[in-house]
Length: 532
Image 1 (cartoon, helix red, strand yellow):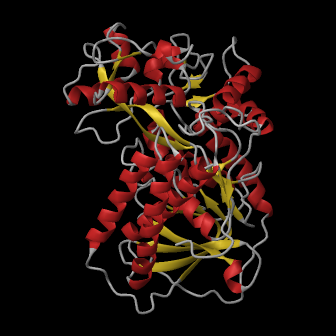
Image 2 (cartoon, rainbow, N blue to C red; image 1 turned 120 degrees about the vertical axis):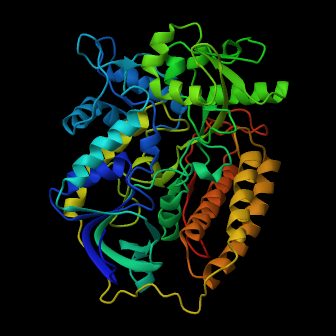
Image 3 (cartoon, helix red, strand yellow; image 1 turned 90 degrees about the vertical axis):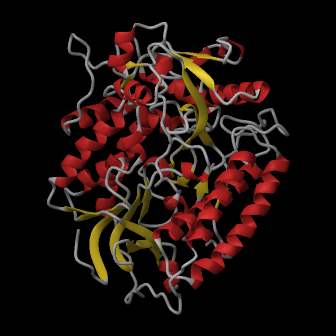
């Protein structure tokens, strides 16, 4: 932590401490000073919660072409093939980089990396550490960051807005961010040669999600507000299996359980996935999530069940120790009882549009990891491709920012609260937050329709009008910043869904059940009017 200051200068400002932000910082520190901002602790990230692992071609019976084919199939016609081929070709090197940084990955008795299989994959190609791969990757990367003299980490700091030359009469270019120190309530100005959004996704826009509380879409919202193009935000991936239990907030049941032979069953014990996809439980996530949603609506049941009881108990406990322990603490022995599961919002396949090195459409602003739209995931993400993407784009962006030319005004206006006062009405934030998440789940969730989307659109417009007035009348807080961003991202998801008149990948609408003949991305950009 650094002492409060009016203005901080750095070469590279990184917002977020997941795999993409940390990997970028490690590489970029070789040629500049790096300041990392994280709004809570360094482990409050989607990466830390990731159970699966990293997909890479490492087995003798696998190939780059097969991994590419699986990615394109799951992406349902919207992947950029050149991007897919480039990222997958770097897979083995990304795994080697993680190992070099001290990541402990599981191995077979013979000493080879242990590979598992997840939905959509035709081969075993996912390296992992038990069922807590993200936690181990986060640990190794944070150790490297903590040991580096050129990297400063500011915990409990949240970005308010990006600094834009357009506010000073110039072209669209970013030169840092306003950042709120939560402990003091002071908003600092951090000026940087390049700013890197590594803020993760926006699962908290839905009432049911596998994401941690920090996943409020901050990067997408801030980038949109300064004119960056955002793309394909209608594609929200719902993980098919999140534990259904009143005491199990956001606990994911990894897809690897199905990869190792887990079967989905109704309360009657009957399997149902064979009727929905030729790969049954190993079908793409969008298919499995819609199948579960459909079965729940047909039966009126609260959950379906993931059954591991036919597998050797010792194998299940040793392969999935974290899941087994967590379930047992809740009274569920997964070696003897099926696990109650439901779908939940898991991953944003759309995001801030970037090029092959992570540059957005705004100069000196980069986006890497889940916050970005690279063209890899298309209309649906292939399991465990996300951590791979984060590593690859972190390396590319870190190499490219070395040539970034600083752009800044002669005088930078500090954050001004003006006549804003402290709010004593926190219930407004809580109620609006809850309302957004519930109508997004009901109207813009797994299955959509024009009528539902229009209802959501009317509600979000009214709420955003209220929030604009509230935001400017009171001094900002972390909760208010997150609500403002969440409301904007909800608006962008709704608008993107409204424009896609077809069903493709993760976007399924009963009004347009077929794919359109012409494949298009959905792009949005702020040109005028308020974006708060």
